[in-house]
Length: 183
Image 1 (cartoon, one colour):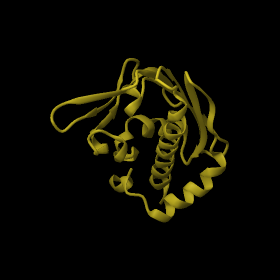
Image 2 (cartoon, helix red, strand yellow):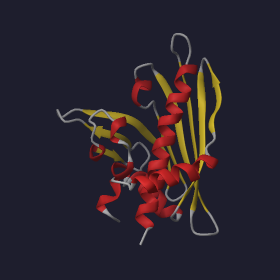
Image 3 (tube, one colour):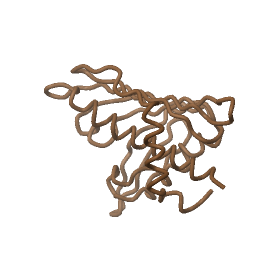
Image 4 (tube, helix red, strand yellow):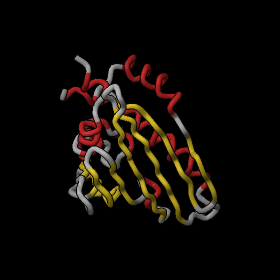
């Protein structure tokens, strides 16, 4: 594993973005009460390494601009039932982004909660990452985030921005693993 993996070569990231656009699913359902975001991507590693990157290495690929501290190094994801996807704040504070509710190492990770501003509108969500081995040694990642809650005027306006942020995070995970597997 490379410590410099948090800095991706712009051409590599652009290439992955273009190649991954064919895999993009978008928002699959939306209403006043909530929405569903689904994506499928291919990760250049086996499911066990993909699971490790998804959990233990989250601070190496998460986009720091989507954090409260603006430092990805402040993230941790405890891959146990009841574990915290948390962020330490510079003033000694902390944010619980989501709670781990299901763990099958190398296969499935499910979290519960609302990311970022979704916390402020009392929404709840179930985010699932399913990992499946491909014949070529890579991994198929099926991602699904189902969000529900109450917001005056409905949750429809949140669907596309949340989907775009999560799509960006998945692309960063993909690029991290691609860089990690490069000679």
